[in-house]
Image (cartoon, rainbow, N blue to C red; front, top):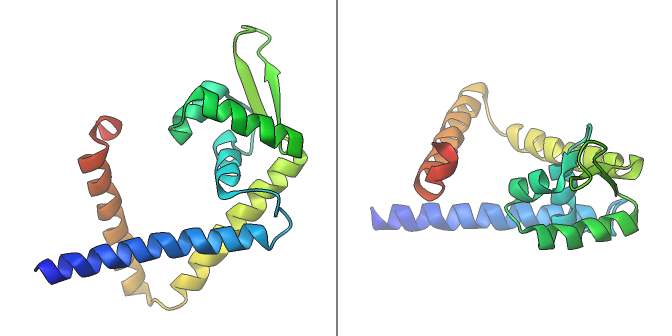
Amino acid sequence: MKDKFLEINRILVEIYDDVINIEEYSIKSGAFSDLSITEIHTIEAVGLYGSRTMSEIASKLDITMGTLTTAIDKLIKKGYVERSRSEVDRRIVNVSLTNRGKLAYRIHEKFHMDMVKEIMNDFNPEEEEILLTALHKLNRHLKDIYMPSVTK
């Protein structure tokens, strides 16, 4: 049984590392090579449509406002996001994607979809359903065990 747990752990860590490495390579060799993975994920957290407040983005990324402010400042300089104050409450800062930011978002989203499609080419429909069920269980268990306040 211990060997099985060690093998599952090894595979999960390897998959996580591989996805991060593939993602980093894709970014660095693509049209948006000036972005880091962290910056791409910040762009994703801002969202494609409308705007989000700084606190919403920080919460989604689980980072401090100070860390987010630094990241947003860099993304503004690179032309991916813009910041504005709320007309209703000037203390609230909204962030939205520029056209360049929206393009980066869409290309990154396509990268993920292409990666999943390529992986799924090796699965028959029954295996797809088994994988999907297993991934849902894994995700739910990880959240229940390690992030119980989020799932309750």
